[in-house]
Image (cartoon, rainbow, N blue to C red; front, side, top):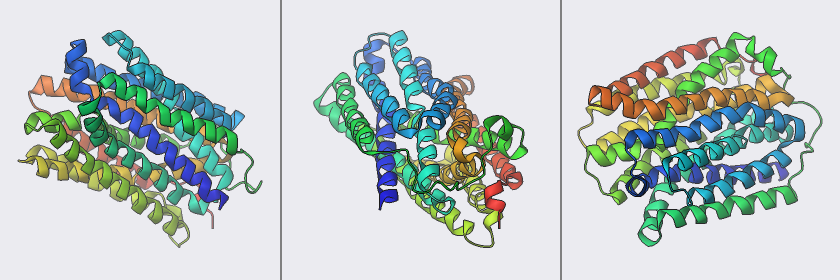
Length: 394
């Protein structure tokens, strides 16, 4: 029962995390209009979060290993919630970039802290489902953020919406600090422990970093430029674009459930050595097909389905990636998963900037989607060489 409550609390946190970070895409137009920002400027705003988020991964992962997820997550959630509120106070591009960078830096602790909590409280055979639940909640949060923000913008200014978004995180942080304890159910480790330095010496971990870069390159598109892309290309209203943008994110949530279940089911079968690799390989192949199809979509519903296919495949790779890091890291899961997330969020940073630059340079976003397809195919190949000590144990 306690394990279920831990997973539920962290799933709720994941939901809050993605509501907070996806909101900026929904208010792109009113912010751009009020602050006189073009698409390249907004690309810098989107990527400022990704850069801060990437830089903060290893330090916050180390803090989760050193001080425990109770203190780390309490501090991180409190700080980023306050910064969410501060987003409503900005009056220039520089201040907006600064706040979003610091917001990303604070949010960096969310998933390394979660990984460290899972190591302490859950056996290895449940890591797939637990990560699937947490990241499914994230995608539901992102999906709901778009219609929720559309509704709020009809009744409040974009500034007031950010004030309101700060409240849930502050409540969560207070409850987490009051009730969660770092003490695990059992002191028996669920995985061998590699230090971050030792992990970097393995081919498997280096490939983990590369494939997670590609995964985030895809998933961040759905949180940043997909909404404006659909709105502009198919002449959609704010509400129409929001409803279409929800679909790939909700599909991504479904992918997380399927992937998490598959990882754990394979882990307890004769396919244990490839229990992480099989779902991830299939996922990247599906994502490549979806990305390749987007430029040929002739309508908003068709494009949405292509985005959904790409998102589904990329999301399938997330749970095995985090389970893989917990396999490798054990008591160092925070820092090892944080380093992987650093690589992933540099992928987000590049993705946020590459989309408007490629579109401006080529006059179309099509080369971006072809690049996305190629990266996903290479990542599928990378998983063929990735094995972890935990999954290989008999």
